[in-house]
Image (tube, rainbow, N blue to C red):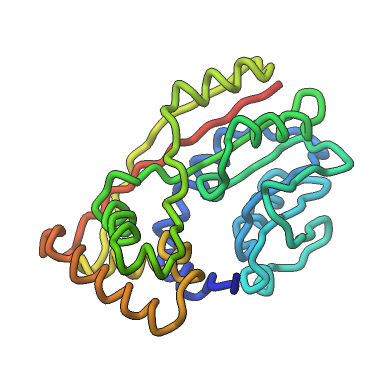
Length: 254
């Protein structure tokens, strides 16, 4: 499938997307000489900040978008790899596996967390943040549109990614995988956007890419217009528009 990730579109809301990263980073326990993996690193800007903040010996960013990785920064001890999170199986273990807003794209979380546990060194840490906004009209409208007769055919039956599980389930998995300490929580972030139309621009840089890459340019434009027609009447016309966005944050250490 084509790489439809657009760094410019994604970073239109860079400031709004930054706070969850900082909140997740604050959960990490810095240790000397850490070896760090950032899975789903995107353009690598936050990977650089992660690397510098932890004074890591080495930080490896992994992403499946060549367009995103083209923007990746350069710094000693920092490198980037093109790859899928589902296939992450490093020959050397890491002191920290970090992921900011990427694991919600990955199916089969029990298998994923089991693999990541095996990739951690003794005393290693896992820090993960995932959007948990499937119930908002911005997401629900996209899922429902994809199930209509016209777009289900064009999408060849593609269905939404699996919903995230309840925080207690993740906490239970972490316990049974041998993590001795953990912190799991849901936090609701509120974003003040210029207007309700900006919600569409927000999801164009993330959620809607899952549909865009499966459609021809003409079908994608028709899908986007229909999405707009269905979504906007569900949102208030207040300016600025208050966009609520829950996220699950979790940290654990062996």
